[in-house]
Length: 83
Image 1: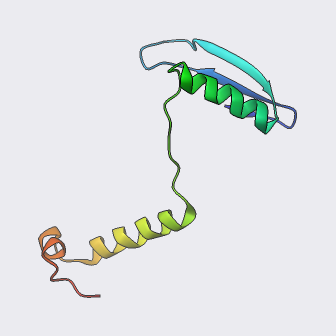
Image 2: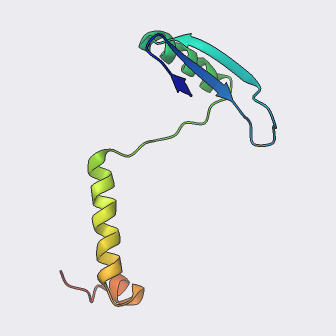
């Protein structure tokens, strides 16, 4: 996806394809973009992706640090690690 002030260019590249199957230039207008992406999803050309919030990213980072500090995964899963 290429975004500029006046337009957004979208390309669809399926996993097995060497070249994009679609190339669209859209106005940088949220309602029109939403309509276009909804149409892509309805036609099965778009896989929904959920992007975590900043809070969810922080929780993930803290969880990973706690796991790294624990002596072993077994200690963590058995609840023997105290904070």
